[in-house]
Structures are given as structure tokens and as C-alpha cells.
Image (tube, rainbow, N blue to C red):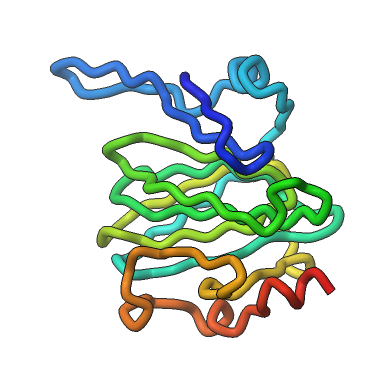
Length: 181
């Protein structure tokens, strides 16, 4: 497995070693020992989640607060997404900055998103299966978010906003500046 530090502190892009032959392909999606060796991060995942979405669906930007913050390891099983992580840790040197990357079934890339980050993704193909591991359980009262089109974060979703499919809940998330007051 190859792991690259993104330009956001503690956020990593992971590229598995893929073995292919006439039977198909095999790759390891996570190895705790190897991950620790390459990043110094010790992680215990406790919950796996999966969504299936159509092209144009935007989910996010979501995070949990307090004792229920979550680190995530995200990947695409089928299809592709534009995945976005935003550093919302006030004392981080990359506070308020975002990282985006296309994750797909073709490239098998994954992103490790540490606690203290908001996360979202835009689906680029119909029937995309998005899967992620969390190091903490979902806790609805601790759920928060930032509006996807916040100008201070300035994410280029590379997709027409009027064609995005967004939940009513995500359409009314607060601005980033309202989180830091």
C-alpha cells in the first residue's frame, strides 16, 4: 500500500497495491499494522457504512462533534465520486482548507479523514457505491454540517449546482463562519 500525506494535516490519500490476473483483481483495503507504520496513526474502526447513489447526488459536508467525532476511511466500490475533506480544527495550520480527489472503482484510491474534519462527496456516476469505516459510532445529536457551497471554503465541485441532488437537510446547513463563532 502506498500512502501520501495530503496538503491537509493528518489527512492521507491511500493507493492499494492491486494484483490482477485472468481471474480478476485482489487488493487489501486496510491493514492496521501497515497504516500505523506509514502514518503513525493508531486507529480502531467500529462501524462500516455504505450508500448507493445516482449521478449528481451530493452528500455533505458532515461531521460529528465532541465525544462523538469520527475519523473515516472512505472508498468507492462501484462508480466514482468527487470526495472532499475540510479541516475544521481551529488550531490546525490547515484550518478552513479543503482537499478534493476523485475516488473510483477504477483507481481504488481511499482517503483517511481524521477527527475534526467535515466530509462530503458528489456522485459522478449512476449506481455508485460509497463505503466508509468510522472509528466512532454515529450519534445523531452530535451531527453537524457546513453548507456545500460556502464561499469561504470555495469548493469546486466540478458539476453544475442546478443539477445536484441534495437532501433538504443538507440544503440548509450553516456557513463555515457560523461554526467558528
